[in-house]
Structures are given as structure tokens and as C-alpha cells.
Image (cartoon, rainbow, N blue to C red; front, side, top):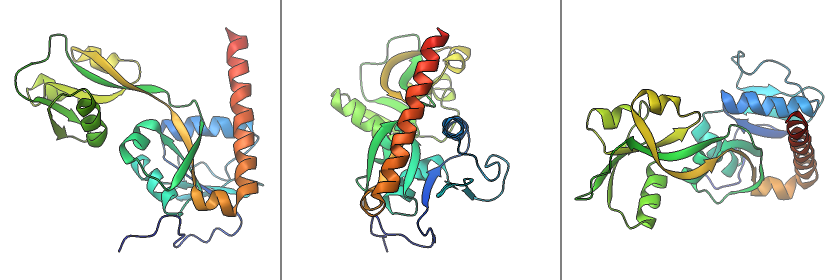
Length: 231
């Protein structure tokens, strides 16, 4: 049976705010923002086996989940807030949360990439990706017919062995594409991590949620100022 969005199940949170986030680059850069706000984790979430990490002296805790699951935890109320890449949100397209803040972390691009030669014009393009829905929408908007091949990793291999004509994947430096003889054919979206908020939590915990948003916005402004001064 499908849970009702916004309904809390199994997490006794009391008056605290639970923030869903995934390990890796997003968590590392989000912790830098928390450090600027003088918010510290009670234990290191990168090494701890605990999946719920309290934050010291604040009514906050991190809930460690898979990146693709962050929107689900927030939409259904198991977490009040979440930090998710825009690539995940484009693919998920949920309606049970707000997206009030671009955290300007974990920046990269979602691109179409392939060999440095024209793509076939006859028949359907074969496109390998883990972003199935985003890829279908992108090519449909262009009026192109494509066959989407769902892969979970090593996207760069697909054009090299003839599995696909091109790929849709995240690109940071572009070094992996270059090493495999691939080039960017098109940029679909600029990607960064966003703060998302459960709609029910925004109503029920409005004061606490707005205070956290304000603190994060202030930390982002200070980060931007420091970056400009360093130029």
C-alpha cells in the first residue's frame, strides 16, 4: 500500500528537524556549510555506521540515505528536509515538497555525450543513461525519437562497444569523457544540490524550518563573498 505523502512513519523526531542527505560529495560540501553555521555532527557520518546522526546543540539530525531516495524520504515525511542534486529532482519530479534554495554545492552538468562524429540521422537514436525519464523528456521536447537503454554505471563504455549512439550522464571536469574519446554534444542542465522541504513540515514546523533556511542563505552569501574576495 502506498504511503500518503507528508505522513510520518517510524521516525520519532519530536520537535527536531530531520535532514535527509546522501554520503559522498554532497554530504562533504553540505558539512562545510554547516561548519560555517557552527553546526557540528555528533559523530562523523562518513565513517559512522549509524544512519541517523544528531547535530550538536541543535534540534537537527542527519538521516543518511541513498542519493536517489532523498526526495522520497522528504515527500513522505520520513525527513523534514533533504539535500538532493538537481539531477535527482529532475528524474523524480515529486510534488510533496518545496525547493526553496540552491545550495550551490556539488556543481556539475547533465550532458549528452558521444563520439566526436555526427550522430546517426536515420532511425531511432540509442541513448544509454541512468536518467531515463529526464532523457526521454529532453529528446521528446526536441522531437527526436530515441530508444533509452537503462544502465547503472560505466556510461562511457556504451558508445565504445556499440551499445548506444550516445549517453546522458553527469560531467564534472570532463576528464573521464576525454579519456574515453568522447565529447560533450549538448548540455541538458546545470546541476547543483538543492534544499527541499516537506510541505507538511513547512506548515507544522514553520518557525524552525524558516530559521534554518535563513541560516543557510546567510552561510551561502558569506561563502560567495569569500570566493569573490579570493579572486
